[in-house]
Length: 260
Image (cartoon, rainbow, N blue to C red):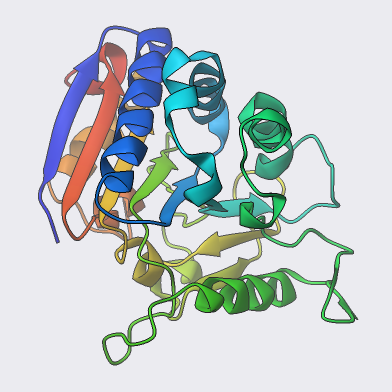
């Protein structure tokens, strides 16, 4: 696992613009050597601002979106189209436009199944059923061979994560049983942040990504960012466990990077 590299920007708006430019550059760099490209999106205020900045960037048209697959790191277990779903917000910010006019195939948008979705003839009624269906979708795009015991997931080229004031990433919360879940995905109950039911990638899956980027803004994140970067226990500050195989980036605004 790679040691974290910290990059600080002056405010949340600049952070989102810089993260968008970095994401587009990463996609282009990967496409110069291999295809397809697998990217994992995040929600949250800065995450969605980043997607909006990608949409507005002139560099967006340089990416061959027909060779990009989009995934999510976690999702709120709500009905399709609910405005609180990360997928819904991402579609509004960027994804629907990419499908409509930039050549992103609709089948390359891999959303976590919402409550009530029908997958392979069965209606998704629990976070565990959604997690199992998503694990099967991930496995479809996993390498043919892998390490023994490793989750069957694509070789993510970049995986974005937000971080909460409690240090959670994806929907892996301090002290929560999901922190030690094995396999690729986990159904989450009793989330301290509403809604209580969610679906998340596990740390097993996160740590398979070539690059993991933690994007966070705000003074309320400073203490947990400092604790994670100092190597705090994952049970107390889950963000400490977010590492990429080749690179781990912490993209922070000045408030989040300030001494706690």
